[in-house]
Image (cartoon, rainbow, N blue to C red; front, side, top):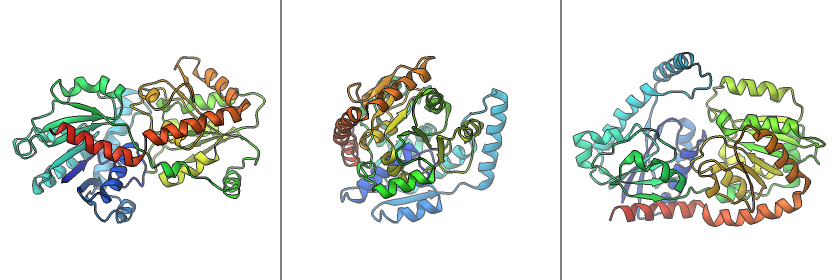
Length: 403
């Protein structure tokens, strides 16, 4: 079976620049590379590092879309103008021109090939491609949308569409209206490279990593992992940490807003200033996916207080796979990834930073008990969120919806 995977072309696949959707697509790439029944082609933004890593997957084909520098410059200037007009200094970069150009490139490639199935990975601008007569006829009943986020407008899928895959029940409930009543929905939970987060670092490795950030050997480590954006709750983590009393714990913040693309938002710069003024708060910047396991292994406690409606919560799954006590919120699909028995799930209120500080103190004061709960959560996460299970469930969902 010949399958094509399309995406937003903002970050490359393999996921050398990070990105939750890109990482999940690479999980499908790994599965297809071992699956003799599938011929997978991935449409991806060109990136030299990604091109080199793609050689690890000889049974998977890649169609590389190059983004000219002038298009990137125009989109950046448009974003700057919109930030001024909307008075939103943290507005995520818009890619209007690149969407138009990449859509044309995608159309040309789809017409030149014959795929049995086409999966659109969360790229909300691509369904319109199949409203054209040529593509709608050629791929009638062969196109599936894999939704990873809330959408706020109708998508009006054409006759080419056969179904929708959602990453959580929360997302299915809140996005079904976008696709109309006729299309079938299937929920498939995300998968994670479990071995990467089960990694056990040696005592020397842990000491070297602590030395890098000038953390004392016996100091507990609180970890935040995620994009450095207001909606991820990183500022609330910092505020909560500053409220902690009688502790010699250190806070390590892993992540950037732009997944290693070299851009820094005003929010990041403001947060960086706070970090620089506190001797026990450390920011790593962007960390490659393959290196994340070391930071989870370093942590005694992971705090991920998302403020927005998380479609599922990939970092929450990672923290549990690493066997670490988790403090998070009950926003969106997060409760589908864990339980209040083994983790702390908080309401998002105006007192969140205070509640976080209380929860951090509770866990740090009784780490052995919380570590036992974390190990139970780890076992449950391994059974529910492995890459292998994810790949098989995607195949099963596609088969069931194609009947």
